[in-house]
Length: 128
Image 1: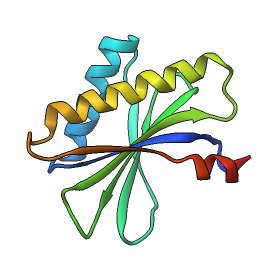
Image 2: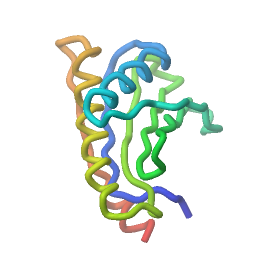
Image 3: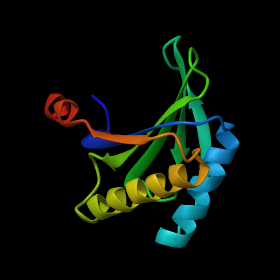
Image 4: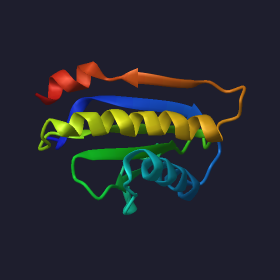
């Protein structure tokens, strides 16, 4: 069972950026909105069709993950949420994380490419 709780916000944008630039952008926005910083990011063992990185935050209540398709090098999905072990205040943190991700992608995406967001409520039901 995952230690992550849903619904999880997933933001998909089409852009070509190295993971370091995505992490730096997220870090800058978290600093300005939450007065917190990214402590590190690690690549996770993922299926053969994508690479995934977990962005580590100093408090354990929230998480941010970035996944990049290996078939379409310009397609990333970025998700943010809270962990099941977290208390009520973590819910607000997850909302701010998601707002930061929207802002991050808006800064880096080409103007003619859309950003789509989905809330995965089916996943939430299966994790309970």
